[in-house]
Length: 310
Image (cartoon, rainbow, N blue to C red):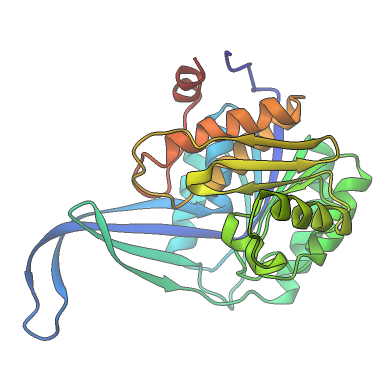
């Protein structure tokens, strides 16, 4: 199948943004101070993470993308603003003076992640309310809304936002976090990974039990569908019409960070374009297979996806 032209698709992405910082270096000896490797940093890189990575993935497929999020009044916040502009994304990044922009610093030696250091603080409620009115204004101009929840506090009003989006007839996709899923009720689809779903519904011993638990959760939350991304087991979609499974695309897995961002971005673009569930998850699965072959938070371009689909 060939990828259709997606340039008419308009997405609104709301959620927790972060800056992914990478320090690449050589490891040639162990520290005399403690049993840890010494990394001599040779180059560094910054990439958008979280909801900003979802936005970048959707834009790389040709969609028109708006992003709504919170940042601190700091250099990482400025870097995110610049990266979004460079990516052609219409970003509305509200500045909260009381927080620092979330940063995930990864130290890479010999193509392996040696250490990750996180910097983060929770946002204030005044800023979150300003974001809610911005959301209402932007809603009419989009076909689908993605909520990218990384548990950093940027989606305190998600229940209200989902209600507004559904009332406006928009497709609503949620990448969930934590074990409290009631706030996602009424969304079109949520996309937990295997571990995240287990936190909410408990373990399952076979496919039949997984289907039972997933269907019960889908009904309880009044969702059209539930997509479970299962890493080496591919992905499974549970919806009213039954169950659809996509096998993992066999290729060298280099790095799974950000793969969920690629899945939800691709899914949203396809659904907003009018694709059915089967076509949308097939394309999202192929996109995931490409992105795990790249180091760090990365995107799949339209051409790469088109080539892989053929």
